[in-house]
Length: 74
Image (cartoon, rainbow, N blue to C red; front, side, top):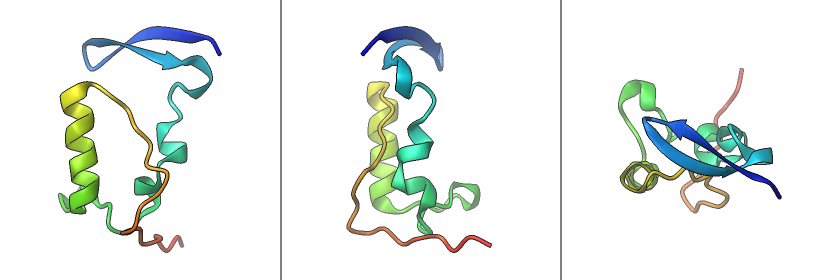
């Protein structure tokens, strides 16, 4: 797999080229009813993941979660 560097949030990061920009496509948090950042209300697990990502300059999809509640899409 080819990898590339790019600037994100003022920092240089590495990414697998075929996955660049696709994190939300795979992350369960985006499809979880508990994930409501527009209300400033996030589940504790999601907030811990986001905090860890910010502290370590990472982008992580969540693949499995015991607290997941599927969003009802209209």
